[in-house]
Amino acid sequence: MDLLFIVRDALANSVVGTLLTAAHAKKVGQEVAVVFTQEALAAVARGTFGWPRELAGQEMRFLMADHAAARGIPVAGRGESRQIDTKALIAQIRDAGVPLYACPVWAALLGLEGKLPQGLQAVDAAAVCTLLHDAKQVIGTL
Image (cartoon, rainbow, N blue to C red):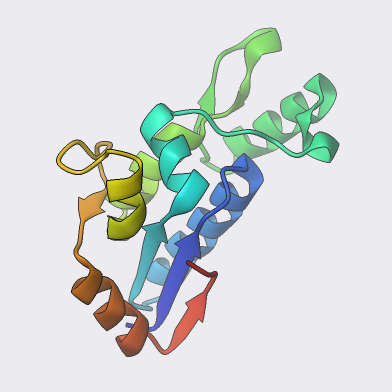
């Protein structure tokens, strides 16, 4: 494994940036995977991601959605409700062949064992340790 990305923040900007970088790395031939943990895992399960104050306003949401659509990044809604569709982006990245894993510790703490969101793979603690050990570079923290 070349790159292992760990996403723990439930901020959409963090998820979007990490997933797009992982997809690009995969596209250029690197072996990559993403582990969702903590509040990011909770957000994937609920389907709700927040935006930081600097990116949360309506004008900024429209700007990002318009630029995202032009780059093939999924956008939800139309008109005044348009915004980057983080949930659809997760599916797009998974469909591009990037493995998406749920941290087993946080899956248990959040009561998600056996009912992970679609697209996230269950792994045990030993598998996470193997991912961490085998990755040439780990980006993020558990």
